[in-house]
Image 1 (cartoon, rainbow over the protein chains, first blue to last red):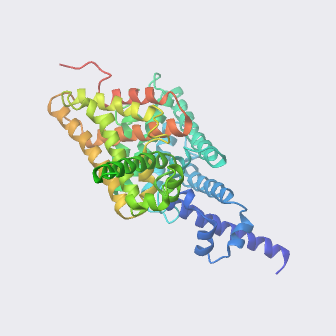
Image 2: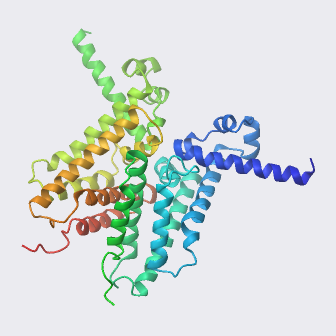
Image 3: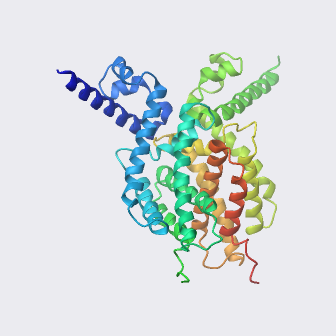
Length: 207
Length: 207
């Protein structure tokens, strides 16, 4: 095998390890992500897995970054070119419901960030910091979309973007729990209903 | 030691094991609750811990039931004698904020039910079933309080108790995440603000 092929092969193996890591962490949490389990699942040697990720923590961080990239590509990017403000926010909210609602092969156990948040919030270190950073970036993006909506007059001038995002995030945390723990098929409709009220889109615009 | 003293001593040891289990599970999840760790923390032999709880699962179930009893005594019972409907619900909601807000020695890592839900929602078995049952009982209690409020005319007749509880539970899931992951001191006020809007108590009653 030429060196170039070896590098390409090594990249593919690394990708396979990360894909599998995301699926395992979705069901069993980042703590369930062990070198030994990956080796068994991927029919590799432990040394083979360790060669790509020196530590369990490096693997956990790679899984989080991958899950974040998947979230961005499924929830944010399809809406990115839409007009900012309520139009784009509503498209993002709908894609976010689909992200949690669909039984995705990539996230068989539900939202990885919610799981990681609960798992690491009692600890310090790079994994907790990464979870907090990724969730903060997302909350800020939502706040900035709402600020635009207020400035554009799509929401009343007294609307508080931070408050709306606080309530909005709660809806998705409960959507995830309702789907994953209770298999509640009414939860997406309940989320949409609450969003319409929260964003004022359930009422005719006074313009 | 008389047999009676032995029984009393055994009960106390069992209580100590469960108390410690709740604290460990609050930080590290129910999966972090191992016989070995309890033995070290409580200066007991593994056999001593195992004598009280034959399996890790029995220990997890006991920790959940204890946490549930603590939640009931701190959040429900102080309000139980109040008039049903909005009055009692508001008292419960305020106690629930305090339950999550205070840095309780009993729950150093935040809401045990939220953690257990995320941890076990990808699995089957008695632990998942117990988490789902306890959370369902609580949601039903909230729904029944809201039904009373609707029947008593404290909420508009079109108000949907199930929908309100869906949104209300989301607020508390985010309150827990905001406190535990972000140390966000504004989260209790944001929760109160959202509750007032959700329960219509931010507007003068039309009666």
